[in-house]
Structure formats: structure tokens, C-alpha cells
Length: 127
Image (cartoon, rainbow, N blue to C red; front, side):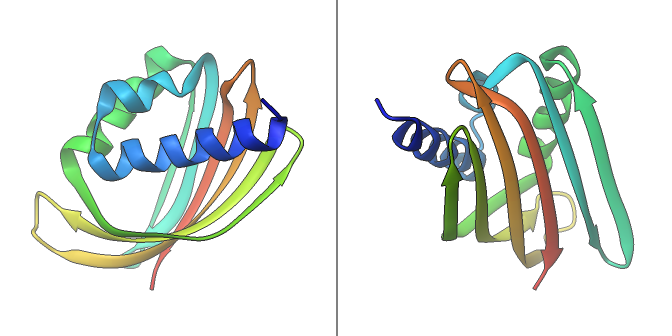
């Protein structure tokens, strides 16, 4: 499989697992020593996360899946260069805690190694 097809498949798998809220499926796309960074803002508050290794990333992914339901997914653009990708996407994020639904745009910067995500940096902002 070409690098481009592998990267595209993995980005789509990452997003599908997020939208469907499937923690085990989501964890499988990450390398054991992956790094995940998330930065954005919501309700005037900065939100930042920096985690390395699946033993640290998994609990954070679990919180995301338990707290937020994603719907109306749209992949707006996907740029692939070698084993790196930039994905611009939009979803409605529904808080399972407050019931609030927020249309949100996200950009993922992804690096692959050995067919899995080695690094994910995600930026988001409510629309």
C-alpha cells in the first residue's frame, strides 16, 4: 500500500473512531509510544493537553469519549506528504454533561510510524 493511501486510511479510521465513540478502536490507531497534543478554546477558556505514551493517552481518550458525542462530521480537506498529514474537519460536539452542542472546526497534524499514529497535534475552535 502506498504511503498516501496508508495515511488517508488511518486519518479516516481515527476520525470514524472519534465520531462513533469507540475507545478500543481509537486506541488501536496509536503507536504505544505516541504523543498526543490538543489545544483550543471553548467558552472563553483555554484547553490544552500534552500526553505521551498510551498509558497516559488512553485515559484522556476515555474522558473524551465519555464526555463528548460528535455528530455531523465533515472532512473539509486532507493534505498528505509522505507519512505526515494535515486534516481540517468539522463536527458538532455535544457535551454529555451539560447537553450543549457546539459546532467546532478542528485541524489535526498527524505523523505515522509503522502504520500507526506516532504523533497527533489537534487544534480546535468553536465556529
